Length: 238
Image 1 (cartoon, rainbow, N blue to C red):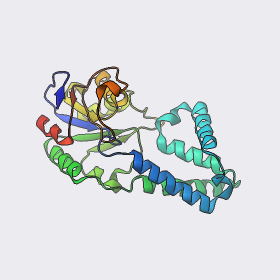
Image 2: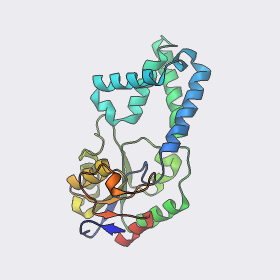
Image 3: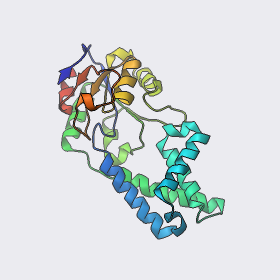
């Protein structure tokens, strides 16, 4: 554990999820592969779309509706609708197909097992103070077992701007009825989590589950209050 700023007493914690509590990259790659296989079996013309074509669809949707950039679920659903037009013209059938593809991905995206150490630390923390998850992603907290530890899970959406916006940090502080400075946010991204939290008045702890934590290799604009070597070091703040 390395301190960069003094840490005041902590009365609650908020957590990022992806790449903070687990390595998200292999999970997403596996889910994308599952969806690709499903589309190839069911929708042959859509399956012919190149990776660049999928990217162009997403970019076009975000350009037309910028708020979609904050909502991974809605962005994927809109993208699937547009792509599946290669195979389906009937609006009702198109909607059903898009939902089936979305469910295929979403189920695979949340199909993983958390390390026992993560369960242990979150369980101990939850006994001591309220915990709220603040995520830009769309993992299913019930399927993963994460919902057992958090008072609420805040997902970014078209009406709830993604981190580093202060929106979800402000919302969490209001739910907790605490001053932001009494809350420690835990996350892997030095911009979205650390900068976003600090600018919202929070204290910030940096930990990454998906990479070696080498500060001078990170795109950092400000330092966290504390850098963690392992998740269980958070127990020192209870």
